[in-house]
Image (tube, rainbow, N blue to C red; front, side, top):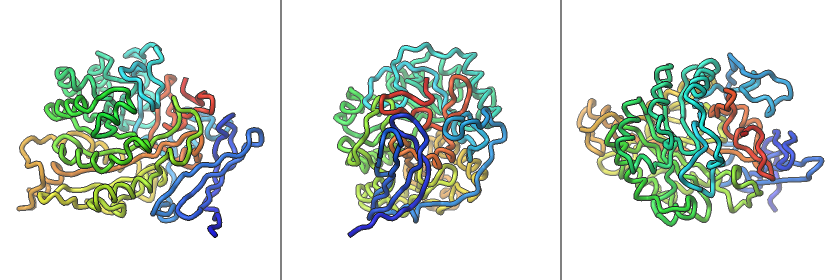
Length: 443
């Protein structure tokens, strides 16, 4: 008989009324289950961690950071005073600015509830958001998102404005359609200073795209990658993983990325979260947790990438993500680069600085067109060059929804959405919805 063992006590929200309530995470075999009860709406539970890696072995303890320029006062406490407030425990590594809510797809899963026909913010309004980020968080990494940001013809100017204000790394989050169909636009983005494309890439089969995005898109994705490679823009493939749709394609996605390593810097998996257009309570079989994903990576790559080579972060909360960095050798072998603390520190303050540098360095273009696709090993100079030209990054981020929200994770968040008012809101809180689809922060 397996007895439930309490792993942690935390706080969460009621999925029906957003009231802050106590939550307990209990261990049962390889599963860790969050249980919480609202005095008005009753009990809820959901699996938050499941697989061969115990939460106890993944947990890292760090010294918190302190927000130097909070934009809101603490009145009601987390999660009601976001902005950031002084109780938040981590700086902004990536600030996400939504430059449009328009989109040219109608996806089953969408953070932003795109196509809501709202007007785009003006260039002046976006400059004000840039400046708000600078005041609160300095020149952190910027991700321009939406909607579909490439629908804005002035996207190159928006990028240039950010660069002129001092942001060293700017990335565009896109489905890639316009990048595939309009090469000249890709060139304009590069000339404006774009560093990286965060490319929606759910699999290597058009059946996957038809199920998740409502259209056959694989050829367009490949063309977008080719155009970005031509103009020296780094690419990160970003699959949204949905059980029953593309979890079985994980290994092939990694193979595809390695086959296109001259352009693709890595793969960043996003296990599906249930908010936005999916406000109903998910079943456990409709989720894939981080340890399950790490187990699948090892299994589907036939041990080429071992789960043991993947590490917890120390920028965000350790239960939010994992990362690994590799070198593709001429033999096809993947050599692990760095140790468990490769881009981390036991101090959150230092971890945030290193994470910003790591992303900017490893997600941008390789800026080389002469090196062999696979790493040479003849001399020290060639080894250094190969690390630049044949390195490969693998990571994942498990965004939370109202069912599995852990406020201790929220307080450690370093990915912040810039609200229209210029406040910085942890990504999960900005997008979270209750059972009726009502948002806590997104307007």
